[in-house]
Image (tube, rainbow, N blue to C red; front, side, top):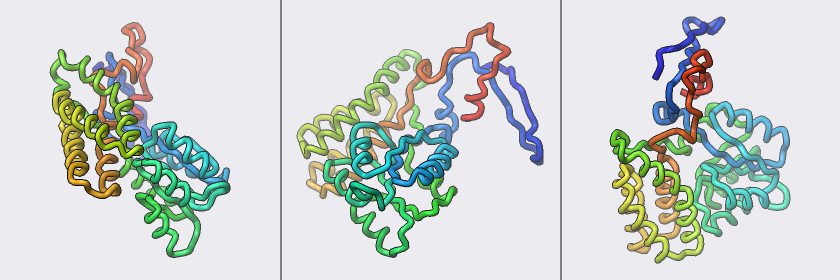
Amino acid sequence: MRNYTSCKYIQGSACAHIIDIQFDRPIDPASFAPTAARARVLLADDSPMARRLISHLLEMSNSDVTCVENGIDAVARAQDESFDVVLMDVEMPLLDGIEAVKLLRSKGYVRAIVAVSALSDPDVRERALLAGCDDFLPKPIDREMLKTVINRIKPEPLVSALLHYADMQPLIDEFVDLLPDRVRELEAAFAAQDFELLNIELRKLKGEGTGFGFEPITHAACNLEIATRNNLPLSELRVRLRDLIHVCLSARPATCDRLLEVVEPEEDEELISEVADAV
């Protein structure tokens, strides 16, 4: 890290400053500041202004947001792409939010879904949770409540315990790069209720996780394998699979060439303010 910084006083504050730092090599901000990790959110709401407002609040909470306007599109996007959480409005055309959640869960979808609604009926929350939602947010959306929910759900950065071994860094990167594909294989096996295939993949992750310095992956894979061996209910398997997916997608690479461009020596005068902002 270079010692070249700039410090700017924030007008009107008591003593707050913005400090820009230039690094001589790529870094992963989320490895140093968990709040720098971005959440991937699918927002399903039929109101254009509600989508704009909630998207704005999510972006202020360090989230990447994809928007759809009905339940059918929400189901399709949730299955085709990778999101940390789906925010599902209860009242929508074509397919309402509760039916969309039921459909996703029936297809084996295990990731977090949060219901959102302006309905004042006291049983709406209960119906949403019974359909398979993990949480419920009333409208109008409270900024701090939304931030709390997102921070609770999004993966916290998981750094390999073997990061300090230079010879392991390329292997750690390769392992982490393949985890999203392996997560999709787990989800597909669970959706098809192919527990033989699911357990084969679990044993692989169990044997490899700690070997690459990610003991929480081994632990979560063991928990799910035990649950399948004991024939626990699908609802319990879903929770344990979600925990495994959570830690798999939390794993950070050992090197960060893909995350930030290397700073060239002749560019000393340029500051990477984006990195400082994230940290």
